Length: 286
Ligand code: NAP
Image (cartoon, rainbow, N blue to C red; front, side):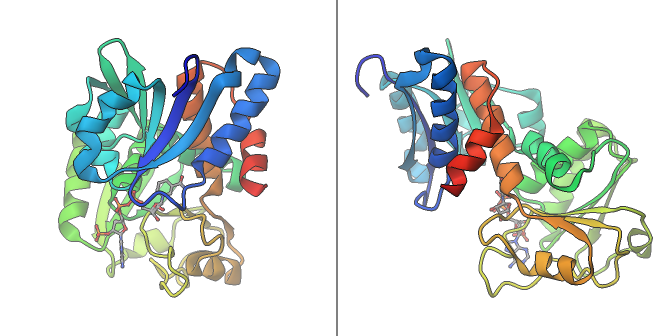
Protein backbone atom coordinates (compact mmCIF):
# COMPACT_ATOMS: atom_id res chain seq x y z
CA UNK A 1 0.00 0.00 0.00
CA UNK A 2 1.47 3.43 -1.00
CA UNK A 3 2.33 5.93 1.77
CA UNK A 4 -0.71 7.77 3.11
CA UNK A 5 -3.17 5.27 1.69
CA UNK A 6 -5.59 3.49 4.03
CA UNK A 7 -6.69 0.00 3.11
CA UNK A 8 -9.88 -1.84 3.94
CA UNK A 9 -10.73 -5.27 2.58
CA UNK A 10 -12.93 -8.34 2.80
CA UNK A 11 -11.12 -11.66 3.26
CA UNK A 12 -12.71 -14.93 2.22
CA UNK A 13 -12.34 -18.11 0.24
CA UNK A 14 -13.66 -17.95 -2.42
CA UNK A 15 -14.11 -14.18 -2.69
CA UNK A 16 -14.80 -13.46 -6.37
CA UNK A 17 -18.57 -13.13 -5.85
CA UNK A 18 -18.31 -10.50 -3.07
CA UNK A 19 -20.18 -7.22 -3.60
CA UNK A 20 -18.49 -5.57 -0.62
CA UNK A 21 -15.92 -3.50 -2.60
CA UNK A 22 -18.75 -1.95 -4.69
CA UNK A 23 -20.73 -1.04 -1.56
CA UNK A 24 -17.84 0.35 0.42
CA UNK A 25 -16.09 2.24 -2.36
CA UNK A 26 -19.36 3.97 -3.31
CA UNK A 27 -19.83 5.03 0.31
CA UNK A 28 -16.17 6.13 0.57
CA UNK A 29 -16.62 8.25 -2.57
CA UNK A 30 -19.64 9.93 -1.00
CA UNK A 31 -17.73 10.40 2.26
CA UNK A 32 -14.78 11.97 0.38
CA UNK A 33 -17.15 14.51 -1.19
CA UNK A 34 -17.97 15.63 2.38
CA UNK A 35 -14.46 15.24 3.81
CA UNK A 36 -11.43 15.06 1.47
CA UNK A 37 -9.40 13.30 4.22
CA UNK A 38 -10.96 10.05 2.96
CA UNK A 39 -9.68 10.36 -0.62
CA UNK A 40 -6.91 7.81 -0.02
CA UNK A 41 -9.18 5.19 1.51
CA UNK A 42 -9.89 2.16 -0.62
CA UNK A 43 -11.70 -1.15 -0.06
CA UNK A 44 -10.59 -4.33 -1.84
CA UNK A 45 -11.15 -8.09 -1.69
CA UNK A 46 -8.53 -10.71 -0.92
CA UNK A 47 -8.85 -14.44 -1.43
CA UNK A 48 -7.25 -16.09 1.58
CA UNK A 49 -7.31 -19.74 2.64
CA UNK A 50 -8.30 -20.48 6.26
CA UNK A 51 -4.83 -21.92 6.95
CA UNK A 52 -3.20 -18.54 6.09
CA UNK A 53 -5.43 -16.30 8.21
CA UNK A 54 -3.31 -16.26 11.41
CA UNK A 55 -0.08 -15.20 9.76
CA UNK A 56 -1.79 -12.81 7.31
CA UNK A 57 -3.66 -10.67 9.87
CA UNK A 58 -0.62 -8.81 11.35
CA UNK A 59 0.72 -8.26 7.82
CA UNK A 60 -2.47 -6.44 6.80
CA UNK A 61 -1.85 -3.91 9.58
CA UNK A 62 1.82 -3.54 8.64
CA UNK A 63 0.76 -2.88 5.06
CA UNK A 64 -1.61 -0.02 6.02
CA UNK A 65 -4.96 -1.79 6.51
CA UNK A 66 -7.17 -0.24 9.17
CA UNK A 67 -10.21 -2.47 8.92
CA UNK A 68 -11.18 -5.88 7.57
CA UNK A 69 -14.37 -7.76 6.89
CA UNK A 70 -14.48 -11.53 7.07
CA UNK A 71 -16.67 -13.91 5.19
CA UNK A 72 -16.83 -17.70 4.78
CA UNK A 73 -14.70 -19.52 6.07
CA UNK A 74 -13.09 -16.99 8.44
CA UNK A 75 -15.89 -15.72 10.72
CA UNK A 76 -15.31 -18.33 13.43
CA UNK A 77 -11.75 -19.39 12.56
CA UNK A 78 -10.50 -15.85 13.33
CA UNK A 79 -11.36 -15.95 17.04
CA UNK A 80 -7.93 -17.20 18.32
CA UNK A 81 -6.12 -14.40 16.44
CA UNK A 82 -7.97 -11.46 18.04
CA UNK A 83 -6.68 -9.29 20.87
CA UNK A 84 -10.24 -8.48 21.99
CA UNK A 85 -13.83 -9.11 20.99
CA UNK A 86 -17.15 -7.26 21.47
CA UNK A 87 -19.56 -8.81 23.96
CA UNK A 88 -22.18 -9.25 21.20
CA UNK A 89 -19.73 -10.93 18.83
CA UNK A 90 -18.62 -13.18 21.68
CA UNK A 91 -22.20 -14.36 22.23
CA UNK A 92 -22.67 -14.78 18.49
CA UNK A 93 -19.46 -16.83 18.39
CA UNK A 94 -18.56 -15.19 15.09
CA UNK A 95 -16.90 -12.02 13.87
CA UNK A 96 -17.43 -10.27 10.52
CA UNK A 97 -15.58 -6.98 11.16
CA UNK A 98 -12.07 -6.30 12.49
CA UNK A 99 -10.98 -2.90 13.77
CA UNK A 100 -7.29 -2.27 14.41
CA UNK A 101 -6.57 -1.10 17.97
CA UNK A 102 -3.21 -0.43 19.65
CA UNK A 103 -2.88 -4.02 20.87
CA UNK A 104 -4.08 -5.80 17.75
CA UNK A 105 -7.27 -6.68 15.87
CA UNK A 106 -10.56 -6.19 17.71
CA UNK A 107 -13.49 -8.35 16.54
CA UNK A 108 -17.09 -7.13 16.08
CA UNK A 109 -20.17 -8.54 14.43
CA UNK A 110 -22.41 -6.24 12.39
CA UNK A 111 -24.61 -8.99 10.87
CA UNK A 112 -27.20 -8.82 13.66
CA UNK A 113 -27.40 -5.04 13.36
CA UNK A 114 -27.68 -5.43 9.58
CA UNK A 115 -30.56 -7.87 9.90
CA UNK A 116 -32.49 -5.64 12.30
CA UNK A 117 -32.01 -2.56 10.11
CA UNK A 118 -32.82 -4.60 6.98
CA UNK A 119 -36.07 -5.93 8.47
CA UNK A 120 -37.12 -2.42 9.38
CA UNK A 121 -36.25 -0.99 5.99
CA UNK A 122 -37.55 -3.81 3.77
CA UNK A 123 -40.54 -5.11 5.74
CA UNK A 124 -41.29 -2.24 8.16
CA UNK A 125 -40.99 -4.54 11.17
CA UNK A 126 -39.28 -3.99 14.49
CA UNK A 127 -37.76 -6.80 16.56
CA UNK A 128 -39.05 -5.38 19.82
CA UNK A 129 -42.03 -7.51 20.98
CA UNK A 130 -41.85 -9.47 17.71
CA UNK A 131 -42.33 -13.20 17.34
CA UNK A 132 -39.60 -14.59 15.13
CA UNK A 133 -38.81 -17.93 13.54
CA UNK A 134 -35.21 -18.44 12.39
CA UNK A 135 -34.33 -21.33 10.11
CA UNK A 136 -30.63 -22.23 10.40
CA UNK A 137 -28.02 -22.50 13.14
CA UNK A 138 -24.81 -21.36 11.41
CA UNK A 139 -22.95 -18.09 12.01
CA UNK A 140 -25.59 -15.85 10.42
CA UNK A 141 -28.45 -17.56 12.29
CA UNK A 142 -26.59 -17.19 15.55
CA UNK A 143 -26.02 -13.46 14.94
CA UNK A 144 -29.69 -13.04 13.99
CA UNK A 145 -30.96 -14.93 17.03
CA UNK A 146 -28.75 -12.96 19.44
CA UNK A 147 -29.93 -9.70 17.88
CA UNK A 148 -33.61 -10.71 18.23
CA UNK A 149 -33.14 -11.53 21.91
CA UNK A 150 -31.06 -8.43 22.63
CA UNK A 151 -33.65 -6.25 20.89
CA UNK A 152 -36.37 -7.70 23.15
CA UNK A 153 -38.30 -9.97 20.81
CA UNK A 154 -41.23 -11.60 22.61
CA UNK A 155 -40.52 -15.13 21.39
CA UNK A 156 -37.89 -16.84 19.26
CA UNK A 157 -38.32 -20.20 17.57
CA UNK A 158 -35.26 -21.72 15.94
CA UNK A 159 -34.84 -24.83 13.83
CA UNK A 160 -32.04 -26.44 11.83
CA UNK A 161 -31.23 -29.47 9.72
CA UNK A 162 -28.50 -30.72 12.12
CA UNK A 163 -29.83 -31.19 15.66
CA UNK A 164 -26.35 -31.00 17.27
CA UNK A 165 -25.65 -27.53 15.91
CA UNK A 166 -29.15 -26.40 16.88
CA UNK A 167 -28.66 -27.64 20.44
CA UNK A 168 -25.33 -25.81 20.70
CA UNK A 169 -26.85 -22.49 19.57
CA UNK A 170 -29.75 -22.81 22.00
CA UNK A 171 -27.36 -23.49 24.88
CA UNK A 172 -25.20 -20.46 24.09
CA UNK A 173 -28.22 -18.17 23.66
CA UNK A 174 -29.84 -19.58 26.80
CA UNK A 175 -26.74 -18.77 28.86
CA UNK A 176 -26.64 -15.20 27.53
CA UNK A 177 -30.35 -14.34 27.53
CA UNK A 178 -32.18 -17.01 29.58
CA UNK A 179 -34.22 -19.86 28.10
CA UNK A 180 -37.76 -18.56 28.59
CA UNK A 181 -38.15 -16.82 25.20
CA UNK A 182 -36.30 -19.46 23.14
CA UNK A 183 -37.84 -22.61 21.72
CA UNK A 184 -36.16 -24.98 19.29
CA UNK A 185 -37.70 -27.78 17.25
CA UNK A 186 -36.56 -30.31 14.60
CA UNK A 187 -36.96 -28.97 11.06
CA UNK A 188 -39.71 -31.44 10.10
CA UNK A 189 -41.66 -31.08 13.38
CA UNK A 190 -43.03 -27.55 13.21
CA UNK A 191 -45.09 -26.92 16.38
CA UNK A 192 -48.77 -26.04 15.76
CA UNK A 193 -48.46 -22.94 17.96
CA UNK A 194 -46.07 -21.37 15.43
CA UNK A 195 -48.66 -21.70 12.67
CA UNK A 196 -51.15 -19.69 14.71
CA UNK A 197 -48.82 -16.76 15.48
CA UNK A 198 -50.02 -13.39 14.17
CA UNK A 199 -47.50 -11.38 12.15
CA UNK A 200 -44.73 -13.93 12.60
CA UNK A 201 -41.35 -12.93 11.12
CA UNK A 202 -39.75 -15.87 9.29
CA UNK A 203 -36.02 -15.55 8.57
CA UNK A 204 -34.07 -17.93 6.36
CA UNK A 205 -30.49 -18.09 7.65
CA UNK A 206 -29.55 -21.28 5.81
CA UNK A 207 -27.55 -21.63 2.61
CA UNK A 208 -30.62 -23.21 0.94
CA UNK A 209 -31.54 -20.96 -1.95
CA UNK A 210 -28.04 -20.02 -3.06
CA UNK A 211 -28.42 -22.49 -5.94
CA UNK A 212 -31.43 -21.95 -8.24
CA UNK A 213 -32.48 -25.61 -7.89
CA UNK A 214 -32.48 -25.51 -4.06
CA UNK A 215 -35.82 -26.32 -2.39
CA UNK A 216 -37.49 -24.11 0.23
CA UNK A 217 -35.81 -24.30 3.66
CA UNK A 218 -39.30 -24.36 5.21
CA UNK A 219 -42.76 -24.86 3.70
CA UNK A 220 -44.84 -21.69 4.08
CA UNK A 221 -48.19 -23.14 2.99
CA UNK A 222 -49.47 -23.77 6.54
CA UNK A 223 -48.49 -20.36 7.94
CA UNK A 224 -50.87 -17.43 8.32
CA UNK A 225 -50.77 -15.09 5.34
CA UNK A 226 -49.81 -12.13 7.57
CA UNK A 227 -46.37 -13.57 8.25
CA UNK A 228 -43.37 -11.65 6.88
CA UNK A 229 -40.61 -13.57 5.18
CA UNK A 230 -36.99 -12.42 5.04
CA UNK A 231 -34.40 -14.44 3.13
CA UNK A 232 -30.82 -13.53 4.06
CA UNK A 233 -29.81 -14.67 0.58
CA UNK A 234 -29.60 -11.80 -1.94
CA UNK A 235 -28.06 -13.60 -4.89
CA UNK A 236 -30.17 -14.95 -6.52
CA UNK A 237 -32.57 -12.14 -5.59
CA UNK A 238 -35.66 -14.37 -5.81
CA UNK A 239 -35.26 -17.72 -4.04
CA UNK A 240 -37.84 -20.51 -3.91
CA UNK A 241 -38.76 -19.31 -0.43
CA UNK A 242 -39.52 -15.80 -1.67
CA UNK A 243 -41.41 -17.18 -4.67
CA UNK A 244 -43.61 -19.19 -2.27
CA UNK A 245 -44.07 -16.15 -0.02
CA UNK A 246 -45.20 -14.14 -3.02
CA UNK A 247 -47.59 -16.98 -4.01
CA UNK A 248 -49.22 -16.78 -0.56
CA UNK A 249 -49.25 -12.96 -0.70
CA UNK A 250 -46.93 -12.67 2.28
CA UNK A 251 -44.71 -9.61 2.61
CA UNK A 252 -41.19 -10.66 1.74
CA UNK A 253 -37.67 -9.37 1.03
CA UNK A 254 -34.25 -10.70 0.18
CA UNK A 255 -31.03 -10.11 2.14
CA UNK A 256 -29.68 -7.12 0.19
CA UNK A 257 -30.82 -4.67 2.86
CA UNK A 258 -29.03 -6.74 5.54
CA UNK A 259 -25.87 -6.78 3.42
CA UNK A 260 -25.96 -3.01 2.97
CA UNK A 261 -26.69 -2.19 6.61
CA UNK A 262 -24.05 -4.54 8.03
CA UNK A 263 -21.55 -2.93 5.64
CA UNK A 264 -22.58 0.60 6.60
CA UNK A 265 -22.17 -0.23 10.29
CA UNK A 266 -18.68 -1.66 9.66
CA UNK A 267 -17.61 1.47 7.78
CA UNK A 268 -18.96 3.59 10.64
CA UNK A 269 -16.78 1.62 13.06
CA UNK A 270 -13.68 2.26 10.93
CA UNK A 271 -14.30 5.94 10.13
CA UNK A 272 -16.42 7.13 13.07
CA UNK A 273 -18.56 8.92 10.46
CA UNK A 274 -22.25 8.59 9.48
CA UNK A 275 -22.41 6.40 6.37
CA UNK A 276 -24.96 6.79 3.61
CA UNK A 277 -26.73 3.54 2.76
CA UNK A 278 -28.15 5.16 -0.38
CA UNK A 279 -24.60 5.53 -1.76
CA UNK A 280 -24.07 1.83 -1.01
CA UNK A 281 -27.29 0.87 -2.83
CA UNK A 282 -26.17 2.93 -5.84
CA UNK A 283 -22.78 1.18 -5.72
CA UNK A 284 -24.29 -2.28 -5.77
CA UNK A 285 -26.75 -1.47 -8.57
CA UNK A 286 -24.15 0.20 -10.84
P1 NAP B 1 -22.94 -21.35 7.76
O1 NAP B 1 -22.38 -20.96 9.08
O2 NAP B 1 -22.17 -22.24 6.86
O3 NAP B 1 -24.40 -22.03 8.05
C1 NAP B 1 -25.13 -22.64 7.02
C2 NAP B 1 -26.54 -22.98 7.48
O4 NAP B 1 -27.26 -23.49 6.34
C3 NAP B 1 -26.61 -24.05 8.55
O5 NAP B 1 -27.73 -23.83 9.37
C4 NAP B 1 -26.79 -25.31 7.70
O6 NAP B 1 -27.42 -26.38 8.39
C5 NAP B 1 -27.74 -24.80 6.65
N1 NAP B 1 -27.74 -25.62 5.44
C6 NAP B 1 -26.75 -25.70 4.53
N2 NAP B 1 -27.11 -26.57 3.56
C7 NAP B 1 -28.35 -27.02 3.87
C8 NAP B 1 -29.25 -27.93 3.28
N3 NAP B 1 -28.94 -28.54 2.12
N4 NAP B 1 -30.45 -28.15 3.87
C9 NAP B 1 -30.78 -27.51 5.03
N5 NAP B 1 -29.95 -26.65 5.66
C10 NAP B 1 -28.75 -26.39 5.08
O7 NAP B 1 -23.28 -20.06 6.87
P2 NAP B 1 -23.73 -18.60 7.39
O8 NAP B 1 -22.56 -17.70 7.38
O9 NAP B 1 -24.54 -18.79 8.62
O10 NAP B 1 -24.68 -18.14 6.16
C11 NAP B 1 -26.00 -18.65 6.03
C12 NAP B 1 -26.72 -17.92 4.90
O11 NAP B 1 -26.88 -16.54 5.24
C13 NAP B 1 -25.97 -17.97 3.59
O12 NAP B 1 -26.91 -18.16 2.58
C14 NAP B 1 -25.34 -16.60 3.47
O13 NAP B 1 -25.22 -16.22 2.13
C15 NAP B 1 -26.40 -15.74 4.18
N6 NAP B 1 -25.83 -14.51 4.77
C16 NAP B 1 -26.31 -13.32 4.32
C17 NAP B 1 -25.83 -12.14 4.85
C18 NAP B 1 -26.36 -10.82 4.36
O14 NAP B 1 -25.75 -9.79 4.67
N7 NAP B 1 -27.46 -10.80 3.65
C19 NAP B 1 -24.86 -12.17 5.87
C20 NAP B 1 -24.40 -13.41 6.32
C21 NAP B 1 -24.89 -14.58 5.75
P3 NAP B 1 -26.52 -27.52 9.12
O15 NAP B 1 -26.14 -26.94 10.46
O16 NAP B 1 -27.46 -28.66 9.20
O17 NAP B 1 -25.35 -27.77 8.24
